[in-house]
Length: 274
Image (cartoon, rainbow, N blue to C red):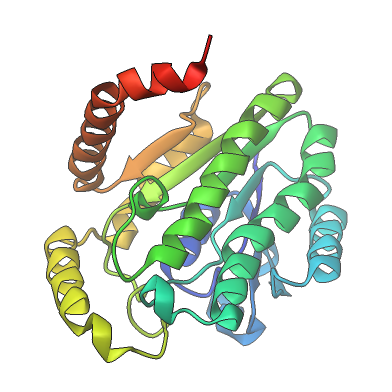
């Protein structure tokens, strides 16, 4: 049976690749984007298998209406993909209140509103998949993208709890954590805080570190088969890396955390009291 997907951020990048992967195998897609005209080629090629919707995920009433429209149009929802998001560059001291709030409004609250709106429809359909697009930056943190890291760590936290809450309904949650890919995440779609000269050296070092992290960027088109394997799996993972670089970063990070926790365990025990 054909499955019905609801994908945010479908104008380009992973959202577009995954929409086409689903459509190419006969599934149906409610595709959303801020600028609905960016979906014209998709609708022209796939016809009535696509429902194109204009959506700003930070607008909660609009999110509720979009999910209702998709369910009414297709009669069911099976796969929800929270892909809409962007990268905010800037040292923590440089980030303005407006930039911090905007980052969380899209990357955290946008995903939360879509998830909440989708759950009743997934239960009505007898289960399904929620795909949360996180990042290697959702489990590790890097200078000059700290507020982005914070947004993805928040997404990771509520999604891990969500997975426990909805398992009995047959709903499966997966956090996709890509490394560096040849998308425009760090280009046209990224935002940059006003720089403070104080951080010039730190920025230079951060740029060099980032360059090494994305030295061999992945091919977004290659993720098509990968995402289909995830949603088709009987027991999909709660977390999965996309790309070859994240496992090394995560391993080093977690080994360092464990070593430090153990080193300070005596003080941790002291804090327990009698």
